[in-house]
Length: 393
Image 1 (cartoon, rainbow, N blue to C red):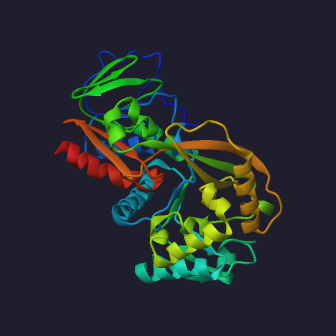
Image 2 (cartoon, helix red, strand yellow):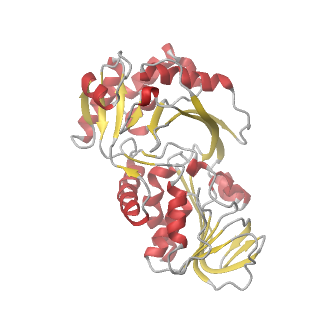
Image 3 (cartoon, rainbow, N blue to C red):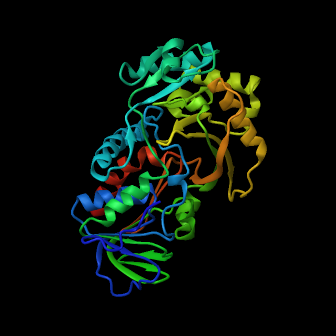
């Protein structure tokens, strides 16, 4: 957890006991201390702007900490691929600046039949070596020890990266709080945003410009923008489990269900055929929105997931059927018996059938930015420079 450096000599941290009225005017106020908000704060600081970040909780507890920590660059297409590539370089630079843990070990997509291997071969032909490198079953087993004996091959995605989602955003926030001209304001709810002012429950913050990064709760401040984007919620179920026999897995690990979910794979001709095959043979996986994959935290535990449920407002209750489905499939992938569960949780993020990225301008000096495709960790650091270029123009 982030320890707020209350006595930092250069940056400033405010908590719920600190009134905001009378604080100096900021060049930029950022609403939200998740990865999208922090990406804007870092980029603004690098431009020499004074920045205030306002977070309603004592630290970020939303989608930015309830994920795989996977920079899933290769699986993106179009603008998201460009943003993901830019974000990758920024993650690497931030790791140097902040000391956050980062692994440049890529990802391995495991193929367990010819149909899955065909998807990987097609994408490898499109992208070329260094982006998608095909692997034999033996080469997959070297990188994913104990993998399902049914594995026929796979692909290495060298450009993908990993961070520890439990600590990455907190480490960035700590670093920002120690920078000159940056103020972190916690335990403070924002009640309204307009040109030149951000209204909070503890007083107003004067600013030149503002960026609102409130995730799926952007509708509370800008309902018209949320409605225009057809915003709704996606609930995902994830688990933290012990690594079987303390195995080490350097890359993120994707499977056939990932190939029908992520656009670079799903958009191939073979991807369409694979989805039809899943629909016929494993319809329960598609019904639960399963994307079976995992990453390993620095302490050795495995982050396993995930399922996807969509609704205007998702229910808070976790069905054990989805958890059992994930655990059974993960055990089969890892060639092991039942997995020991340490933690279970639900993540909630914004979703939209109209756009992968909501960017709204409710007034000339305000932008609302919400990633609506579940890839905030992948693209946020590559998205913020574009938003600020436009806002500052």
